[in-house]
Length: 189
Image (cartoon, rainbow, N blue to C red; front, side, top):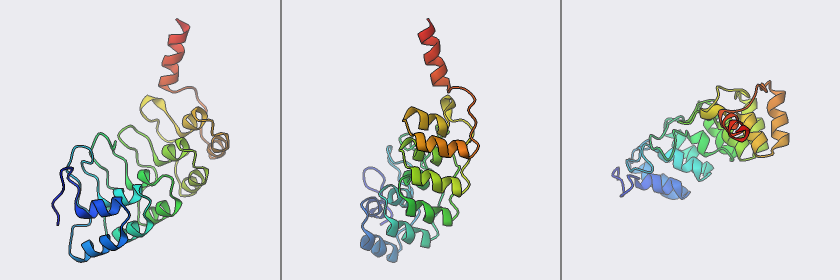
């Protein structure tokens, strides 16, 4: 039961990914490892909790958290870029609340230096941005690779209301990202 398919995903990972609560309950009752990490290239290091969070399955997230799984697990696959279950659930308020209640950190960076707030901003989820700021997410975290901040994502995607929210939480407006500076230099030539 704890062996994976050709992509290193266990039956529990597949069940979580597809939101099948009854299947997850049955597998966990049979003793399948709740924190098993996928071993395939694409999903390397991804846990059933990440799959459940990505599929927005509140019931399976609750079930896995009740089995004491690691709320901040980070996949090692380049495709997943070190995103935590919170990152995968950036648009699902109840799942984020559940994960945060079980100790998930709201300001962890992925491989690219982006935080959950950056993902929520980029996707235009104003309610999620408010929730994350309420939970203590930094409006002005350390810059991601390329100098990106949540405010720069809000500006890029035209999310004016979100930009105002971030600015109300003391985000600094201190220039452009590295990408914008490089683009400006190219245009000056």
